[in-house]
Length: 313
Image 1 (tube, rainbow, N blue to C red):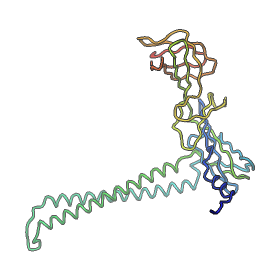
Image 2: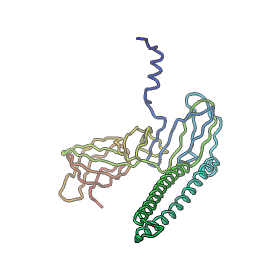
Image 3: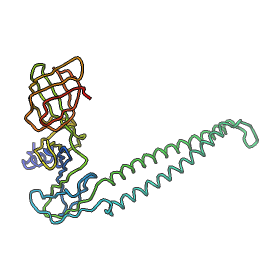
Image 4: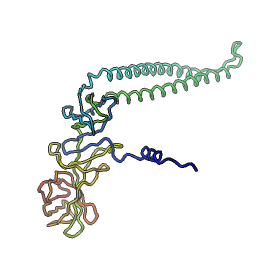
C-alpha cells in the first residue's frame, strides 16, 4: 500500500474539521442588542450591510490580528445607487410578469366561455358537419387543453412573482452600507440593534419544605444558524458580562430560595414570602411550582423584592 504523506493528512483534517466558533454573535441586553461579526476583506476593501434596526452611529470597525482601518464610509440605504438599480430591475421584471398574468386571465375568460358554449350546443348533422358529436368532443377537448395551459402559465407566473417579492424584500433590507478600506485581511464589525433585547422570566420552584430554587430565564428571539447568542444581565451602557445561551428560553442563572411564609392553598392568589436574594434582578413574569406542580403565574418585581403573588390581578 502506498503511504499517504503526513502533510496531506493534516491538510485534509484542517479542511474537514468543523468550525469551533461562529464568526457572528449577538449579545442581548435588557434595552437592546449588539451585533458583532468578523468579515473578510478582498484586496483591502469590504462592504457590510447594517441591519434595518441598526443604530448607525454605533458602528465600530476593528482589525482582526494585523492591519489597520484606513477609511470607513457609511452610505444610507436610499442613496446606494447599485442597490437602487438592482431593485428597479426586479420591479420591472415583476411588472412584466403581472402583465403576463393579466393576459392569461383574459385568455382564461375566453376559453371558459368557449367551453361553456360547446357544452350548450345541441349536436346537429349537416353537409359541412357530418359527425356533430365528434366535432363537439373535439371542440371541448381543445378548449379544455387551452384552459389547462392557461392554468399552468398562471401558476408559473405567480411562483415567479412570489420569488421576486422575496428578492425585493431582501434587497430592501439594511439601514446603511458600510464601505471599509483597510490593511490586513479581516475586520470585526459591531453595531447596536435597537429593536432586539431579552426579557426576563422566572421559575420559583419550591421543594415542599422551606427550600427551593429560583431559575432566571432569558427569552430571546429564535436562534439563527451559525450565530452565537449571549445574554447580559444589564443595559447596553452597563455592559455587564454576558453568558452564551442556546434556545429561545434558556436558564442564565440559579439562586437558592428560603421560604419564610406562604405555600400552596386552595384559593388563589397564593403568596410566597422568601428571604431576599443577594442579586440585582430585573422585573419580569414569574411561574410558581410546588413539588413539581405548576401553581400559576404572576409578576415578580425584581430588585430587593422578597414576595411573589400568584393569580393576583
